[in-house]
Amino acid sequence: MRYLTARKRAEGKGASHTGTEHHWYMTVSSVGLACIVPLFIFIFGRALGSSHEDVMAIFSRPFTAVLTALVLVVGSRHFAKGAQMMIEDYSHGTTRKLLVMFVMGLSYVVTGFGLFALAKIAL
Image (cartoon, rainbow, N blue to C red):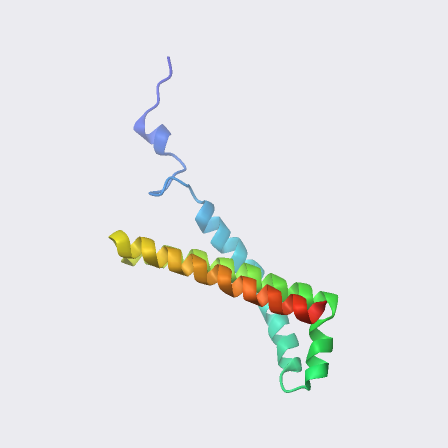
């Protein structure tokens, strides 16, 4: 016979019953963004004000294209998770559900358009 106490059933789980996965995702993605965003800003800053051909040449390099894609994808997911957490904390009912769907959709649209533009430049 198994004896599960209330504490044993709840151990490792938060209010949403997903444990600390969300916290770890946000922590890891923020550390990753803290490493790659300054590099991206440096590359983007050097390209700013250049001619169209120079900008196309800079962003068609493999390292720059991959770095830009990483910033787009990781930054967008980090935004979506953070905004979802904020919405869940401060909104209730149907408004909460609609706002979460809007934020998720917005992050996917921004990521899709950004990756499409990057693919057109890099390929």
